[in-house]
Image 1 (cartoon, rainbow, N blue to C red):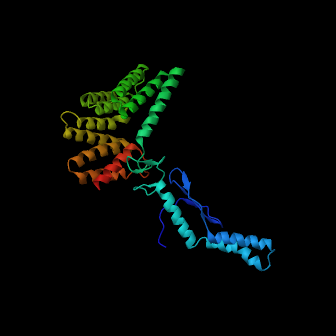
Image 2: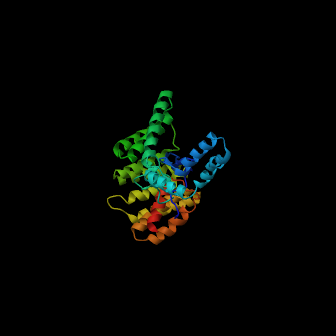
Image 3: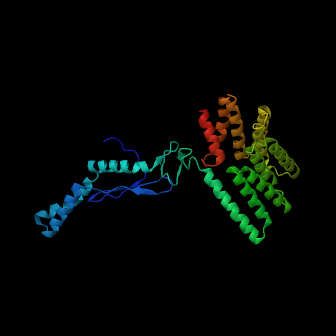
Length: 324
């Protein structure tokens, strides 16, 4: 008999009377048990054991003891055939990820849009919906307990999630309100970051000029306050916005991406470096410079020993797959 696939994550529940197997999702552990398949040898052994007991042993002792022999025999061709039949029954209930090779359940662990498991292609729509729900709960609790700072932050996140899920105009209005409420508390540390979110949301609405103005405001605040932790990604936002305006400026966008790379490398901010490199590599790909794009992005992506499944890493990996 040839090699049998789909055999890693299972449990053998076979016994002296027949065969049954339980198969599990490689990710969550949920699974299915195959139909029971009776074994003729096993049933015969059970009868022999009964006869041996009924007649008090003697010459039938060996017949009763045959059960152990049959149990060992269950691992032969009959077991292989039963296992293969169980695989054919259960295999359609799982999907195999073409990237990692894992077999996963479609109900919980499969991203149908990406045709991969959720470890390799997380469903960010679900994650954004979860963030929106958490932000809503934060707003309610902060309002109840009288914490305007956290209510404002929750409002920004709630607006960002709405914009990310297609309710762009409503999301932009909420981010504006959250940012105003946040600064009304006297806080400023996160303002440039929130302005970056607002700029990106305006980009989704096709309002590139408004978005660029917000990035410039954020960069001005970074320069005045010295809070440069977000500076690299603000340059990246600016480059992306320059590519979606009425008159896309690829040359200036590339300059923004290069500035983002330089700042990220100076700060040793690897995730900002990856995001900037991905934006620049995508621009070069669109310009027919695929080899340069791969040479830039590949080593930076390779710095991440763990495949964390974050949006930035997945975006970079998909781009690299297309450049191969």
